[in-house]
Length: 416
Ligand code: NAD
Image (cartoon, rainbow, N blue to C red; front, side, top):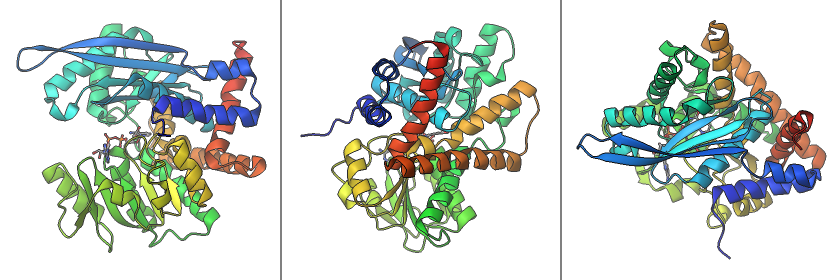
């Protein structure tokens, strides 16, 4: 039987497994299986060749029982409503497992930003905000960056929002440039949080991180910072990295400065001097201590899970592992740090950004990182304890912690 790779079907199947362990009330289960609200809209954008391109946009507010929806906006040629639904569901569990007072949401546009000019991207970003401005904001739903969106795009969206609403409201969007109320440490936050969870997992596994080998798939905001931090914080030997065009390998370890320099010059990691080319499939199957998927969904599947040799898989990407692969990796004794725990650093620091915006009083980077460490390590330990107590794998344990918290908020509100 072929594997179902629909991300939302996967997110629902993961919830179903947790609901069975929790013996969740069937009405609550049915409620938590679906997004509470979703918006589908067109965004007409004047392109530089004179024609008007009609883009399709989505915003899903999956669940806001614990607080305003929160989640990134992805610009991707293969974006689908089911990907956005899945990512919004995972945001709901992520904010809950991190115990921050926010719900879960996500947005997306079907487009290829790699083929668009900066002014076209600005008009698209402003168009996205015009389409949803009435339904987002500090107390409703606060977007942030995700794949192929960045602080500049957040700045355009915030500006459009503030022009439309007629007041300043910096917490309406996070991942902003520092000059517009962004938080120190938000850039590396997702990777930094992931490093704290890797540190804790390594302690449990009795693994020394100094000199441990590592492969990272994806070299954007998350994967790029993961390389630098693994190298700088722990002295790990990152032997392979990749992006959408392919990967590079060096048995002696890759220096992040060299890779970033080459990426800035050529737009790709392949061809970095002193390295061998490998493809993404080979990278995932390398014999390394730690594998970090930091690109997109469905990278570890029933097709390749048997070939994975890493001892720890730290899921900095959202949804990189299918349920079939999950079973295989768990049977092989591979320690998985599940996505909505491993990559929660981004939303935790986004929450810190909202707090700083509310007080108009800003923290320095060491304070941000220290508070991030406390939050994500507490979440990691709660998941670990749940896994031990219920004798379940880490992903199911993370769901048990998160779903309990969301269900409790739903019950207290009297919705179900
Ligand atoms: P990004 O756009 O900055 O970078 C994406 C990277 O992945 C790029 O290097 C791109 O070339 C690479 N890539 C794309 N398709 C690929 C493929 N098929 N094979 C290999 N590499 C591929 O995006 P990002 O913000 O770094 O996000 C990466 C992942 O982390 C996503 O799953 C995202 O949802 C997740 N995430 C991001 C944040 C955040 O704060 N940015 C927070 C939590 C989770």
